[in-house]
Length: 110
Image (cartoon, rainbow, N blue to C red):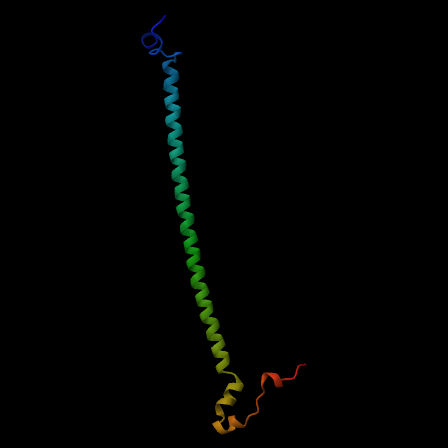
């Protein structure tokens, strides 16, 4: 009987040529380089998209805040220039006390 460790255990079951092994190493290296380049491109793309999204959110946030301020100014301007406001501002306290007013229950439904 053969000694397994000395005879069979140290031998490979098949032989490969040097050309095949060199080609295998070259293909593996090329694949690793391509994979690394693809990962860098994805990383750059992700950073660019994140930055673009942040800029969009900032612009939309500022635009919304400016729009709200303009709306409030427009309402304030409209309210201060109203003829009713001008009329009410000219009344004295006694005249205001004599004005008729309605409770919610007294307003007729149409």
